[in-house]
Image (cartoon, rainbow, N blue to C red):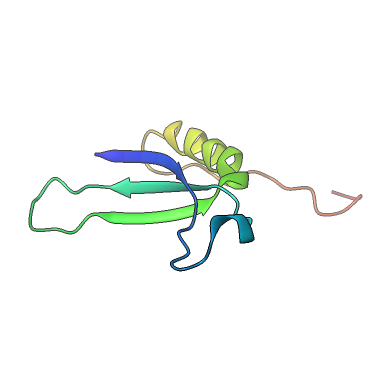
Length: 77
């Protein structure tokens, strides 16, 4: 199971009005087996668009391999 939600860092003992924290995207992966621990990570909310583009590109791959895209490196390419 995958869960995704927005969070803000919790700063124990500091008043909220004194800190300005950006929202973060929390991703939790719960394993199917009860013996395994869930995995959780957070990323800045500003990179959600990049993550969505990467996941969309990854989902388009059927056999696990997609040839790399050509990136123009100079004017003569």
